[in-house]
Length: 493
Ligand SMILES: *[C@@H]1O[C@H](CO)[C@@H](O)[C@H](O)[C@H]1NC(C)=O
Ligand SMILES: *[C@@H]1O[C@H](CO)[C@@H](O)[C@H](O)[C@H]1NC(C)=O
Ligand SMILES: [Ca+2]
Ligand SMILES: [Ca+2]
Ligand SMILES: [Ca+2]
Ligand SMILES: [Ca+2]
Image (tube, rainbow, N blue to C red; front, side):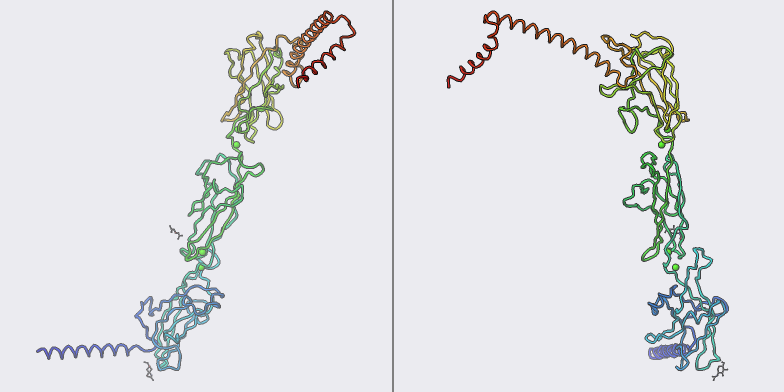
């Protein structure tokens, strides 16, 4: 039983060996190594090589990336017993495949291959897919040397693999003008780049790059959407903080593909010009005002009550330290927009004197506006000297930005004899007041001093006459007395 079974098993085993050996023996020259897929009427051979430039092929002709295994039995020559003759047909392409590839048997591995010998640009001349060459297709005729009439035909598909040999590039140059009031998040411009390569080699992303040593670098204020190239405002813009005559930002944008192992990139610089927007109000300006961010912090004007006459323009002054100067009320838009400004009286302290005054606006040069303040109905000097008027300079825009200044009144010095004439036409009015006051004081002091000196002289003279009878010896006595004293002091030594 067991012997019989063993015999049967052994015979089955040998049968298998015989069968398999028969199968291998059946594979002759021009037979496919694999039973490849039928992608049509003919069996197919699928291969792939990388695209290559002329230089690639000159430098690395035997690089495996430029060749592909031709999985057919036999050797490609017409001499060996299992030799075969390979003839590519020029049927699908305009070019002859035998000019692009050589068909050869690798001497060391004894394997058949096709090898690229002519440059192929997979990418074409544009980024569009229309001019891409992704596969080369042709019919291959294979004839065994031992009987050339036993020819076999295959459809060959050679896939052309992409190489990242193109850097992405921006299709145009970009310049744009925007207003400083454009809100954060707004799209300023959209940049666009192209890459002729395939898949990751052509998958491009945008990013902002800082420009070293450029005061107009915009990398802090703008960013770019990585996928779509939309440039957006990232931080609030400020026209005023840009240097004069350089109201623009340079935004450097990089575009990079995702090619492995080393991505390729290129750059563009977008010039973003910023225009002025109405973000600042008017400001009062006079020499010597306390400036804060380019505007007078607490604009204050004053006038002497004597300079206030009905239906006459009130002469106003500004004060810096102890110096008072005649000054006009002038205001200007802090934006370069030079918006129209209108002056008005908004309040008085104490209240209720608004209608005693009128104010009018005159346009001046360089965007300045001037206010003219008039008294239209009498106020008594005591009331006036305690009065303060608040004046508003308002932009005639829909935002109605404004600034406020105060005007107060002072009584001139009571002692001043010169009265109204002291300030007329003079630059330093209160300076004049002070000088006339000082003059009076100086005269008084001088008179007093002279009196004191005279009195003391008289006292001295009287005293001298009492102690020394001769008048002419007064000088001698004083000099001798002095020398005596000196001598006396020195004698104890
Ligand atoms: C070659 O093959 C053809 C087709 O199978 C056959 O007719 C012919 O006899 C063969 N010739 C030789 C010399 O074996
Ligand atoms: C590029 O890659 C990103 C992420 O890797 C993907 O979301 C996007 O669809 C790709 N684009 C293209 C055109 O391949
Ligand atoms: Ca690329
Ligand atoms: Ca490419
Ligand atoms: Ca502005
Ligand atoms: Ca303004």
